Image (cartoon, rainbow, N blue to C red; front, top):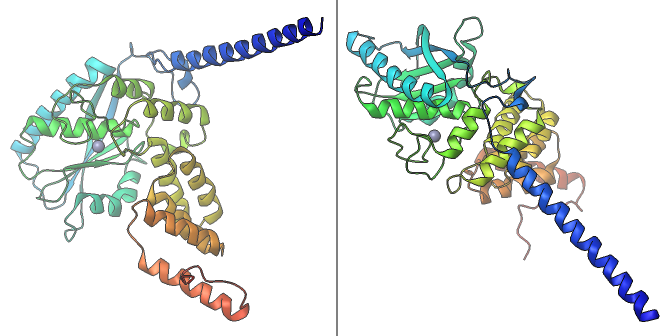
Amino acid sequence: MLSNLKNKVKFIKKTIYITIILIFISSNSNIAHSEKVECNDSINKDIIKEANCDQKRVIDILLLYDADMILDREWQNNIFNRLEEINKFYYENYKIKWRITDTQKFRFDKNINNLSSLFSLHKKEISKLTDNIEAKVVLAIVERDIKGIGIAATFSNVVMVSDASKFKNHINSVIVAHEFGHLFGAWHTQRKNDFMLFSGANKLLGSKESNTIIKLMRDYNFDPKTIINNHMILNRISRLYSRHHAKGEIDPVARLLTDEGNSLYLEKKYSEAIKILKRSNNYYGRWGNTRMILSKSYYEIDFLEDSFTEYTRAVFFGAKPDKEHEKNLRNKFIDLQKIDSTISNPFELNN
Ligand SMILES: [Zn+2]
């Protein structure tokens, strides 16, 4: 009798256990299914107009070029040809067309010899140029030999490319198309036949991953503020990223949040910066850049232990040591020790 009862209990336990497993499997397969992005996806409602790939989307561009550059007939023809190639690809895959509606000259810093630094220096100013005009996106062209061929900030409205041969090659089309891809949040892949290939992309072809993210975000308005608090869309993007990306590629959602955290830090809104940088770390915790800004934000509000911890993590995850910040932090600990000798200075090695 007792063993019968025991068996019954065992059976019930087993059934509950199996049911839990089944629920888990089915809920996971729901997640997997929900990642398939269709053009008429309704998740985009509210934040961005409902994506509908039957409808053509035209995106207006402000063409920004170096103040010393002469946009002669050859340049104009080549830009026209490049846009034709880019549009053929974007229209066939995403029903998107790009068109130049404004042109402006811009004085890029001449002393900088790499595109990445030039981009960091001017990005904020360039981004605002579209505030009072029709164009949504800025394509900035630097006509000189400089380290780097193209750059864009994820989910922003600024693309910067460099070319000293007047945009005459097909590869220039691939580079611009690739940088445009980043504006929708597309990340680097390891797919050879993909315009979002991490390095050396040379074909106007889209992998499954790149097509999925661009279709999901095809009606995005290139204003990060409109998506930054939309956890549902951000989680979804992050899940798509986690399925396939190039080795060492940073989660695009982390990029978005760290960019915002950096802006808040520069605006001296340190607590808000910390909040958003922590969110960034939840998506991708191994990015030295995020940790460094976090360390500097903690320093400003006198959270010195946290500042130290994040600084060591930043350097560990590949950020360039910031000697000035390090010195300031070390000195603050020394000052504190003068007031309270029990406080230990983490910069001093324990023997
Ligand atoms: Zn890229």
